[in-house]
Image (cartoon, rainbow, N blue to C red; front, side, top):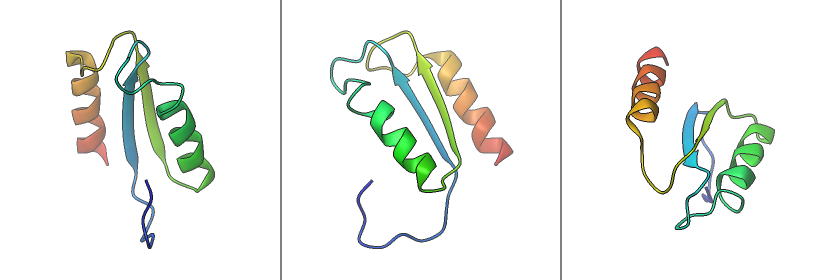
Length: 69
């Protein structure tokens, strides 16, 4: 999320498992998403019951989101 220079405002898709022990949600997505939104980014954020994985239903949402942007 740290860059030397920002260019444009791309839309962003983020998903995160509430049981993620590798990248805990409270110190990752729940901090990053509000910062992105405050900076004016359009964020599609999806929390799910799960760990450090990408469930099929989240993958489907990501593809649907990507195809609609």
